[in-house]
Amino acid sequence: MIRVLIADDHVIVREGLKRIIEEDDRITLVAEASSGHQAVSLTRSESPDVVILDISMPERSGLDALADVRKACPGAKVLMLSMHPEEQYAIRCLRQGADGYMTKESAPDLLLGAIHKLHAGGKYVSPNLAEKLALNLVRDNERAPHETLSERELQVLTLIGNGKTASEIAGELCVSIKTVSTYRTRILEKMNMDNNAQLMRYAIEHGLE
Image 1 (cartoon, rainbow, N blue to C red):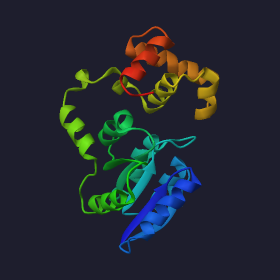
Image 2 (cartoon, rainbow, N blue to C red; image 1 turned 135 degrees about the horizontal axis):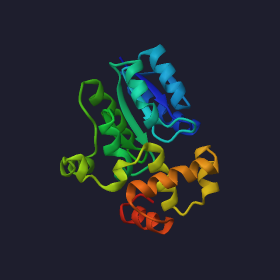
Image 3 (cartoon, one colour; image 1 turned 90 degrees about the vertical axis):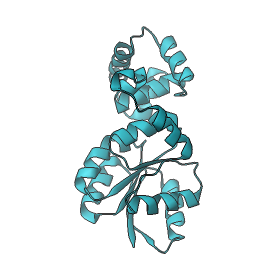
């Protein structure tokens, strides 16, 4: 039996994942978490075989919690689940230790297949992502500018690309406007840009909006 832990802050998403898992009698749900902090704690106490970890959760994102989830149960495989397109986060997740990446738009049978593949010691990526990974086997200094950003900085850049104001970004990420301003300053410095218009143009050109 494959023991699975689900971590997602949306109840409706967790319920959907549970129903999919229930279709396979070789997989059982051992716990569900609504935050990155809970995911780490429950991974430590339940020792699941596979952790399905949502990237975007309040207070502490799945990507922020990834390293600690791996430490909490070194034998667990981690499948990152996200509403964001693969172009935004997939390669970053895999580089940071995830065993697979899947968007929430994926078909149910793909999720079950991914769980079995990870449990068997494999990795899971879509064919489209596999091709991109092959094209991205390059040195760090050849990476796109946004790949040098931290998880939070990338989130802020993406929201700026969506035309969000500083106050809207602060509300969505549960941080202060001053903190958003600090992230924006770091992003501009790292990407060698001067204003939001340049950031928005970059985000659109690279599919980050």
